[in-house]
Image (cartoon, rainbow over all chains, first blue to last red; front, side, top):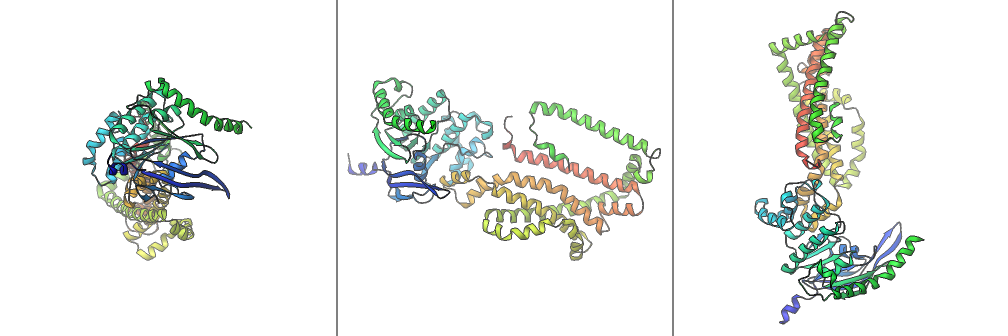
Length: 271
Length: 269
């Protein structure tokens, strides 16, 4: 392969010795111990681990919403400082503006880039069709179900084509069927577009089926325990993929990695 | 000004159209019954000097309508009210917006604004008449002053109420300051501002009428004052009727505007 292609694929996001300490009533808590992580261009990387292991904190730091206490995050040779407009961020709670209709919400990234509503319309309609909510284009968020709001958020983050997308448990609150259908949509959109996706989830099955790499965190203070490469062939099928023996092995391996943490959490909860 | 209260109650579309009509019937019936009792009592049980009678009031209104007093007085009062409303709400919006966006200025001005806010605005009427004379301007000033505070306080609260996560979301999308305003701050504050505007309209009317009552030679407030001076009870009631009808009409119009502007708040449909 040509040298410039390898350059291009080289670590789009470079987390260098990043840690985060939160203070609450003068009581400092280490949320994330110093962490190194390289995420290369075009890859799908999932962050998994118990609650409070610093996954979302790391995502927020990549998005520039909070500052690392130590270390720095470099994206495409530029240090992230302040809000990072080079990423699309689909947060756990959707951020659809309640006073804008679905179509107006999805169009917003394009309007911010300076397009007019008229010129954005075609692309917005296309996105709404792809996530299957074109019939609700003129509904307000309060009139949509949780699943439809998630689809609208997904359409909103995809409409302006950011090269890097951060997703924080985007499908966490969905029922099993809807979840699989959204995963399929996300996979097909990602496989054709060569985007980098950093995906936080609690769901090991989801992490394995979608990702190139699964980053396993352990909790309190959060740190990376291992990075597991998922060599399942693509394109993948979120339904059939689960019954494959290779999948089962990876699942078991990940589960064993997480088990001690979960046992420890259970003990804390019980006492 | 009671009518605004029931707006907040959740209503189901199907029920509200049906019972809406039933309510209207009941309300008309009550109004008719009250007027009948009033007409019956007047002259039989109670001296018309104190309570006049609906028929005398209607006669008075007719007389005013025919000789042009009604339209002239109404226009005068309406002018003062409308101008005061526009001036007061524009200033209230600007100041509320600026202070709402700047915690520094808000803190700096807080005691002064509270001090002026606590003075009953009506107590300032004599001062305003000294400054602006007994003409239209003092009534406009009176109405504007009252409206200013209502719109200011609502705008201030509205701008403060903007949810941070919405701002963060549009900033990640690359929004500049102006786009933050346009997409998040203004629409989010709009509900508060509209409430302020809606509440202000009757108060603008109050401001104009109080100004007229204290010193004037025209307007509905003046008519009421004059009729009272002449012991013309029917005239007083006729003036009050005009004010009441104006209030109800404005409220209905404002409710429509508010519903249209805040469509996103009602779910379902």
